[in-house]
Image (cartoon, rainbow, N blue to C red; front, top):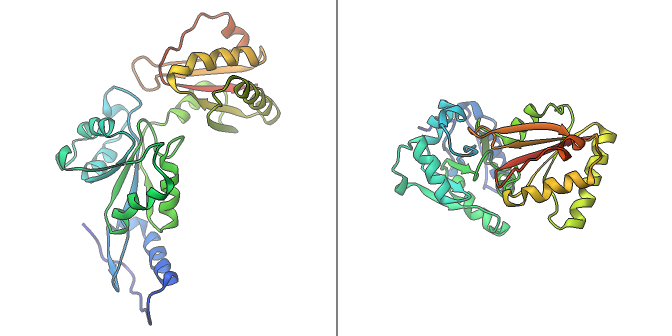
Length: 278
């Protein structure tokens, strides 16, 4: 339910871009009032873009998504998703108030063009609240949603991150490598020569800056990256493999490269976060 604006704006003359921006800025400053929409002299206040974390795999939803977050998501009927099938499975567990087949779902993935982002934000600019759901974990982190969130800020749309699982932070917490200084690289280059150069580069940066270096890989290329790290990193560099985080099959191990070389270990095609510290 919408609430009245706790502010009266007296405006003289016609509306130009600067005036519209002023009104949107006023709206964004009243986040505590949870405004859904309001009219001020014919200007419709934008809705809220909720960033919704999703589970990192199959498991009990209540262990990774707080009840208040579930209640918030259940109220929404419009979503921007990476993969509709995965999103529907998650939303079924949330128990949305509207039937799944009546929910509006727009796709945002690696194939979405930047010029198409405006259309995805159109419902928000018309006063509707929308949820952004990633394939797994937190939206807009190593995820196509980041450009959408940036554009939402530019258009004066309120952005609200909801609490949920982040494989990157959970891996860092459990690695023992320290979180005072860390860098997340996303995906390293796939081509072998470029990948080797990048590994040497970030290992050197880790030693000189006392930084934990974090990166991920497409699961079917896990072992190729693991073997490259064993080949190109120094023997005393620490490597953490954080696999299947939050799942029953979770495995988080930190060892020196020298110790890993003596260990028979197969990550397989399981989602893994890689962390090194020299």
